[in-house]
Length: 247
Image (cartoon, rainbow, N blue to C red):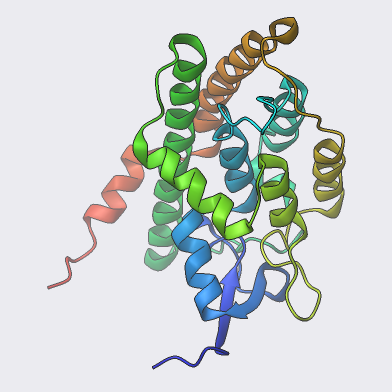
């Protein structure tokens, strides 16, 4: 039975995304907190999670019926969707590729499929939110519950509060828990954007239409990213097929 004070290691960029087993990518935390984090968020790198928190906030309103402004979506998505997502992280965050051994090929294949799966989730969520804005279609129940679980875990009553907590939450040794390997300049730019974000009524000045257009642009950008970030999944599928099946 686990003691309440037991800790373990959290890889901020998961090993399934080629996150290295190094000090700059690992936080120590209570096992119970670590488990609750993954139950609420899944197993993705910080930039993927932050984009999901943001896109999932479409439809959120505060007590005055105000939502996040279009500029917040635009600035965060522009910053967090570079040509190569790995450039958002400090040197040494990722496993260095060595040779073409069987084990190395299998690791790369698994990492590519994890990346493809999370990109597909993000594209799907973007389309759900586009539908919510354009035809007022309700989000799938699972997506609504996911966002509620994320808000409960980070104890945030607004998307800005959730993302700020994610970016600033620290362990007992004052090291960042969830965003530890992110480049500090990227983290600070995100905090500045969130600090200056002021909710507004989406009916004002065509704000809802602007968010709709931004999500369409982001979905198209993800299609480009899929071609740049993902290796050829058909080739990698052959690597996985050749692995012996566990009994």
